[in-house]
Image (tube, rainbow, N blue to C red; front, side, top):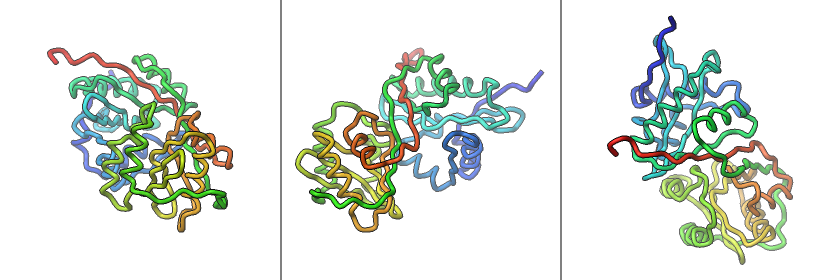
Length: 280
């Protein structure tokens, strides 16, 4: 008889070991991920991951996989789930997810969300089996061509003022990685948030090593979105612009694709509603 699978929290692993496990668990995926201890610290802080509620699967002393849980009040997020190559398609992923869902219920989470790569049909089938439903398609877009010469330019502005205008105009929730709580964490980090504004739109972004990451934006139409994006690209030191998990029908996504941005990934955003834990 095979040894049983047991589960512990990621709080019981040191950061280097956890980073190594995550890297192995994502080996061979469409978008492999290399994680070091510094990246784990950033992700825990920015995305409200809870080590005590996140799960590691073990068999005979070997770590088989990991599932991370982020918690913000009654909302939860699967901040990464993966199984090491030799243990895939053996039920480890389902066991991890069921353990994570149990932890989410105990933490008071009422809605649990995640993203799954569009081409990962096996994972999507698992999530649907567990009760998740698809909400929308999200794109990861990257532009690294020549900076356009904008016919009109946006002006630099106070990021917090831009954020207030974006929130006031918002009609759908931001993905977890770009939600307001995430920006609150990034707002006190280095490099600080930046923002531009123009008639009909605002965008908040940050620049790291020549890469501008758009964090939130709002625009009345594709033309207004284009002014914001072209202005960010024209800023000194910006070589690449990236927009993570932007809804495919967002005017910013349309404007970026029109400029030749590459779609590096398409994800399906999914969610399930949880019943409270017994006695909760």
